[in-house]
Image 1: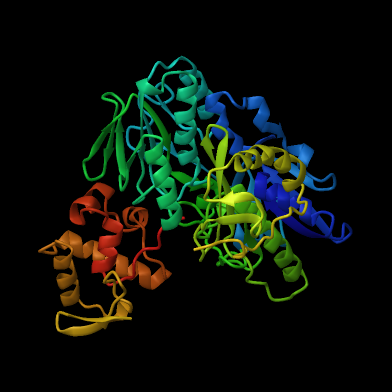
Image 2: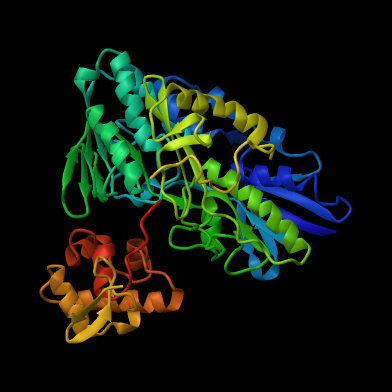
Length: 409
Length: 105
């Protein structure tokens, strides 16, 4: 019996299990998926929790409901990947041998990387919304907050879902307006990037939105430490930003198990061929989703597009065929902009987000880099698509590779 | 690609003045590039960072990030900001004769 092991049952790992299980011959292949938690979180939904739009219940489902029946499930942390011996040691004592390994261990926040961030203010007037606990405790805080200065800070790049902190300030502007206290709240967006976003054209559009919504942009700010005694954010070059409420995206890193196994870079991301998703070190290891060092967004849409190419490549690898270098870095993100509207961006390794219509050129129904109600509904509908189609590995009406048709420069 | 004469040597540079071929680099060029970046004198610590970056690039084929220089090069981030003010990753890479670090996504 040959063995295929998937590490991580988040978005990427679950999709891969669902794609491969029906196709690999059960008399030849045994598939095992490993995760330390029983609960699957719909992470794009975390953004809505602070504003009471979603609750914890809206974003969780049991992982096992999404794993095909004849795939073995191991619930345990990973102790170590011994790539030279083709085996994985789990913390529960089990050892899994493999012929093919798919690493889908994701990424997570590391507030301990920033001096002072975990001191007194953490979860008092400093919150993240990239974890379920952070998002729910921020919701509690906001319910009773009477106003003051809200600072949204991105500590360092790369982060997962690079548009989420922008969406947060857009939604905050809307939410405080709804609460009738917008005039009592000052909002500042503090980022290490030179502008609102990573790519120039989108950065210009999104920067315009910040201005329109009276949100102050402080670019090129590299957070060195947080002084929670004095409520100050301090950059490495000594600049200070005051806050009453600090919402922060801490340093994002790959799994510690990757570091223990000597397979990662300085942020514990696994170096891959960005076009085939094969590990640079071991030919029978493939990596997908946030766990890779591929220079594209860490986002569910990326994991989904990657899964289509990785699925083909795993079958080709099994058949001894050369891999297809077809992943183009495609990412597709709805950007919630508040007041029932949203934007959409679509881009890849080489083409930055451009305005236009999507997915049907000239028709839409979605508009790229433009604020519409339709884009907002696309975002809200996406949760249904996620649970019912995307995780199950179903075909979505969007091509894995980016299409230039319908976009304009 | 445009060319530029730095410290008496004509080299290819990109639109922002980063060397195209890291092998064109020498210490005199580094001193000149540092001056362009507002660093009039390269101290021992500057050289430590520059040599680490070049060595690491040679070994791994990637321009080291600030975190890499901290973890593997042993230079604290605060010091990097003092040595190469206003964006140490970019500035140090330029002086070390490497290309512009890839932007974020």
